[in-house]
Image 1 (cartoon, rainbow over the protein chains, first blue to last red):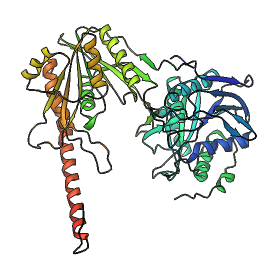
Image 2 (cartoon, helix red, strand yellow; image 1 turned 180 degrees about the vertical axis):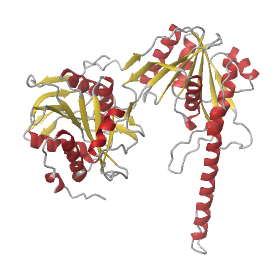
Image 3 (tube, rainbow over the protein chains, first blue to last red; image 1 turned 120 degrees about the vertical axis):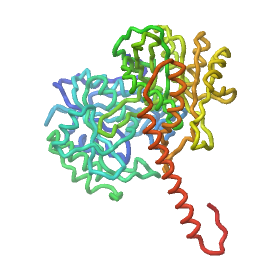
Image 4 (cartoon, rainbow over the protein chains, first blue to last red; image 1 turned 60 degrees about the vertical axis):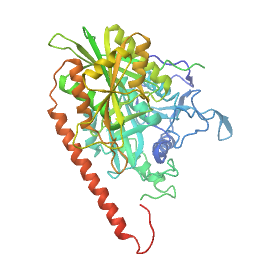
Length: 242
Length: 266
């Protein structure tokens, strides 16, 4: 496959890491992936290694939720205020070597024009870094286990059983994380997705559910032994589980 | 900044084919075209040889019931006719491009491939939505053609010519573009009321798919057992009958529950 020239990657340092595992999340359903990733960043303190910029990243999404992009709705470009400085919307790549070599990918939802291209570039970068496996953190809104899983192969699903993980969601997996998960499979990166059970909020689909995010973090911790403390998330947010 | 070239293909095999017809069906109302093509692929044991991916496809993946992931894609299958007559290429997929630009790009790719394999006739399969359908008669099959000379072929097989309206998506676009390239094609459309469940999920209309395949197999001069499709058609009929009964009982309960003497609407 060819990679488009329209994405730009800014490298902050040359990574020295051997066969890292990737953890991917983005602001999806009830922000579960994003919250879980924030916790990882807080507690593992990975270093920002690269940033991916795209003209298809709106600062304002016309679609609700942001990951449900439509061909006719490009959104509006603009800058984001983060802390004291203004910056452009971007995908961030963090890296840590302890307790295990890990790339943490914080996604951003492109509009319809850019979703595949961005996901391809992300997967390519992970491939160049030697990533062979990724864990994708997200949410699902059905009755079932606290955390359900999906994978790029039946073998990996079998392996996931050891951690009490079973498939429990059937249907579309939209936006950045879904496409990185799927395109990774084409590039030979195996993937296991952890879906935290949540109650969808139709009025505010990305309304954070920290408890569901904590459940996802606990499963990831059990698999990768990252020694994370999810209790901070448990005490967060006014939205309880239903 | 320029945007990427959006279509990518993955060639899995290079079949050696002679005298090829192309058959195309995609998810449509009642899944008539999709079910018809999938059934032929299954019954003839056609082999997958090429995949297409496009950034114009809907930006998501599908999680299957068994927990594995599937990308949105279009697929080509081939079947070599052991009788030595027409070989077949099937073009199908779990989605269509979500923009006209993407649909045109896919169709260009399909026709380039069709010309490479010397495809002589293209059949697209789809649905013709009607308000209701007689349960006692087989669903009607309508036809549309790229060239008036093909009308006689439709008449010979008792297919009603569709003279007005439009054929959405790849099923229509493929034939329009084929005509510009001097290739001939037909669209067969199975009559369907496009049944849905109460929550709005489409129900596969296997009865209509069967009617389409009855005609298509005659046009292609091939024999395919319809036994499995008949079973599916029977199950569909039973399911729809149950749904209708359920709907009726809900209506009756609503009528009984209304406060006496008040006007109401249902």
